[in-house]
Image (cartoon, rainbow, N blue to C red):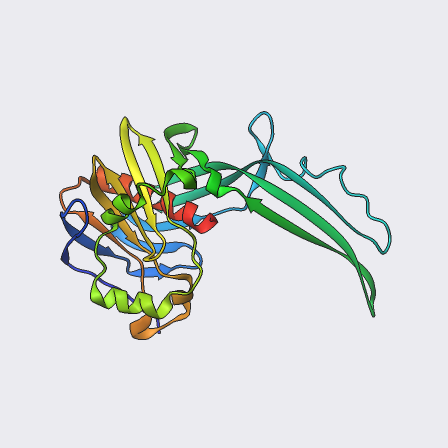
Length: 281
């Protein structure tokens, strides 16, 4: 039986720095693992988030996964060989907004370490070659990226290095608000010992500046403009995807009711940017 979440006319009062009353916007369907959400608001029928693995960045800025490793491996029978490379990597994440017929891409670049190992494995049927790839991206050193639609640049963004986050993270996390008792109970049931860390993204888009903060403990992403929260995405913990009934958390959005449709769409785009980065960490 499919689980459906419908939220009608629900007004919440947000804690934290802004204190604005917020509308709660639910999804009629949410396929979290595949990144598909049915919204039917602001002209958007469906949201499709896609995150992709890293590719090496060449001198001309075009990503390629082969040039960084070609010519590095020579396989000798019965031997295991490996090669590694440290360079700049790009992840070409994107979001599709059905209904509006828009596709926004978020190419983000980060330095990192890559290692590829090839091993000849023998079994009853003979021998085969197995390849193992390992990426270690240095997100704690920061990253940079663009917000693109077709060939147009809508904005730029930068992930703050971890050492620049410590002094201000408590202030920015205050924008993610107080957690309702029902949500706190479900989060407690689905939390686990290790989760990705908090992060902050600085964004410039349409002559406006935004701060995006991710609260890792509560799986919340907030977009702040002029020190006011204009959008929040409540995500589901990875473990919570596999729960059902009263323990399940279906993602939803919080927004001030006074935003125009254009502002609401732009806020959703920025929230999806934060969600795409969070899924890559």
